[in-house]
Length: 189
Length: 57
Image 1 (cartoon, one colour):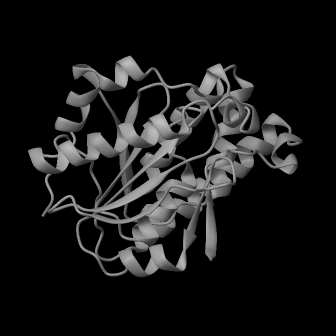
Image 2: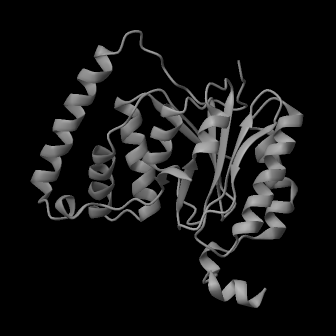
């Protein structure tokens, strides 16, 4: 265990508060995402599993679910590149053409959904996507069109220059993008 | 085998970092205009709204 900690450079910033994610407040966030108790229980269970697995690292995990039944269609739990998810041929095959697809992945730095996340949600026709952050925050998002990544980065830079933090700048950039593009997101409270 | 990666890092390109405030605002305005044109050209317009709880069709 100690060796694993050292190998992956575990750090406090991305360490998950296991008490919080095991508690009622966190579980209720999943109850409020979807009006299907069985599916929300599965989402919560897998969210907890992913967070504990990746606690203290910058690696991400991801699951794809059938939104009607909660069945796991695919997963990536062995990513070796930080802050990225690699789509394998097997994943692409498993999610191709599925209606009511729910995608859920972790964000170690606890940032909101990235613009790559929105574009991926659009390209793969996810019904809804969920980002679970290592700090316990949860975001849901959806996209009905491709968004220019360059514009998003222009907005982020603009907000950084006026003193926003990285997270504030990314949230403000998403709000600006929402005004012109067909995307939506919200933090689950 | 990995087909491709979805990168969650927000890395601002050097060319954006080097822009003056005026250049930055001008570039944003250009993209916003292009976005409005693109949005207006979409038929039919399909608004996306995320509401809680999420009701799957």
